Length: 355
Image (tube, rainbow, N blue to C red; front, side, top):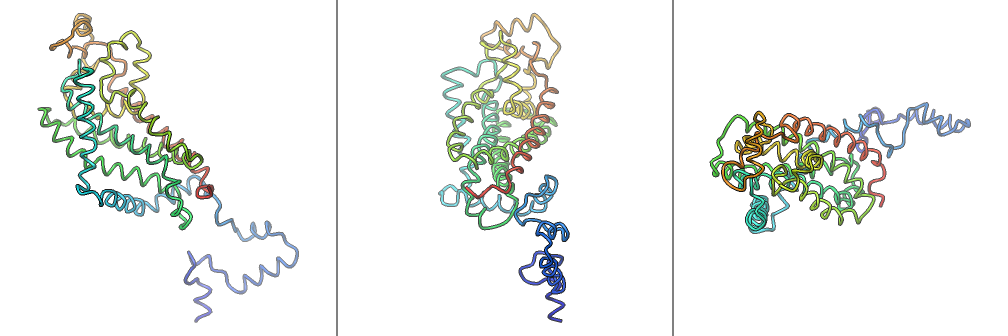
């Protein structure tokens, strides 16, 4: 009985088929003694190095098998993140709200970027909350591999679990922030409509994009320790080009530069922010350029107006990107980021933890 249990595998074996019987071991030893090379023996018995990189589809399957671990890891880290703070999890909401207050004072009042933007408070807070999801995902992912070296060296698991887990942490924090966002938007007298449901696929596309980019940035950060220090500056520059605190289509200096306006509006951050704004802000949908039939007189009135309802006539002008075009760009960026980021990260799977 003891011999049979030993042959079927025991403590320390991963699966029963990994156990090698005494007769097989003797056969292998005899063949090795006969002069057969190790490579030939490995091929004959279908052996492979324990640290070998799995195929790309096998790697994806390994990540899927560990989805419960990834979710549990993200939830535990999310809860532990603010345990020492007196206000605890409230900081997940207070941080973007404080940022919104500062940006409203500087951009909305001092710099007057609220010109031409209906319901600027809801417009601004929506942009900051959605942007914060991407910003924190990028910065955290750029440092995740160096910061997790003890865990990487102690346990065998697909390293992609780490950047994916940290994106889930930010997604959970966004879910809490959305409760406050909805309350603020409704408080600014925006109506609750069926369009709000479009925010769900928009955020799903953003989550896929953030995950793909997190994998991409995690590998870059694993190879250069200074990359994590540079990332906040790159992300901050990107924020100012993504229409977080202002509307790209209402900036007067861009009206004579349609190509630049188009490029700014199709950048990923601007796309996902615009999709969510158009979903939950009816005032934003009504003023989106191209949302109404073109009218030269009303469009001219919009371009020459400085205040009043004429600013809402932007809907009668030609839009650089249509609402349907935003969805196509959002889906395209998500797929591109996930495919490129996943393959790029997978190619260095066996090198993580050696630095």
